[in-house]
Amino acid sequence: MIKRLLGTTSGPWLAVWLLALLLAPGSGWSETLKVGMPNQVLYPDPDFASQPLGQVPLASEVNLLLTTGDWFKVSYQDRKGWMNRLAFPQLKPPPGSMPALLTGGGVKASGRDEVALGGKAERMPSQGPPQLEDNRKVLKRNQSLYRDPDPAEPPLGSVPAGEKVSLVAAAGDWCKVRYGSKVGWLPKEALDF
Image (tube, rainbow, N blue to C red):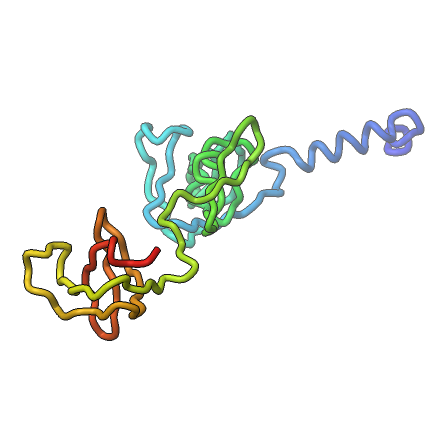
């Protein structure tokens, strides 16, 4: 009988049928997943709004039975139910899935902003604070150094003309500078830009 089944005509079809049988759900070949997030729940339906069947602790192993989008039908302690992909952070989201589109990969720091235009990313200069090549500025004239940008307050000290100060910040007509061990405010007009 086996020779008849493995004959020249039905041999390839039998191999395909056996392969399909082995790969079918419930065939004994299942993938085991490890829960990677605390406080996970087993649901009767692939829906967070459904009444939970019970808790699945962190590091528990579940057997994968079926996958639908971002939901996995699993078997855990003789119970079958659904768990969301979020319970398994070690798995990569499928390409084009909504969580993958929303969360994406990690953000890399850069000194430039990227703008997507028509599917192409164009690089544009960052709109952050300007980076000064040399933040040391020379005073045009003798000037009092103030604790706040207010000339009515008593000065912290004075800075002679020709001295270099390090620019810390700017606000309106005032600049916050460092001169020696002192940090204070000078009128912008006193600095040589």
